[in-house]
Image 1 (cartoon, helix red, strand yellow):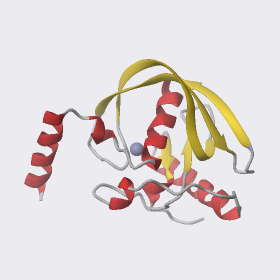
Image 2 (spheres, protein in one colour):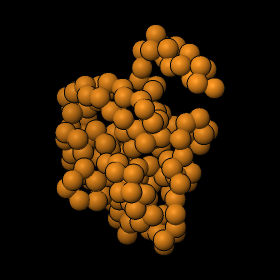
Image 3 (cartoon, rainbow, N blue to C red):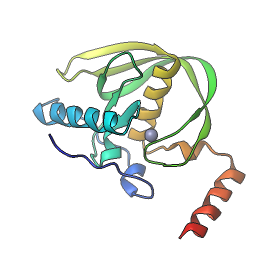
Length: 160
Ligand code: ZN
């Protein structure tokens, strides 16, 4: 068991577009296991590899219906919209209202390297979209309006 440490803002890896996995090997499999452990330990419903400092397109989610491990996940279909508040393990203390697709179809590779398509809605759809955002370098604070972003910047400066 590797002890993965959560990466938090302003760590620049959170802003990187994570590298695609060419072939799923035992390395990725053990990374996914470690990520799941880190997610459960922090009581999160999802975790992307960049959040533990790994530059690879790997994500894990568990919204209460079992663990899903995804390699190179990508949304292939979106339906409807829903706005809800979200937090993020990498942005402690932030809570942002985000409009996301209500239902999605996500395509990814399993840890055995097989192509899988999954239909998701509700919290699971939201968690998957959140993790895919991470793999593209996007964070919940990017959804804030311009005034709130400015306030956040001022708040950070004061805390320094
Ligand atoms: Zn997050």
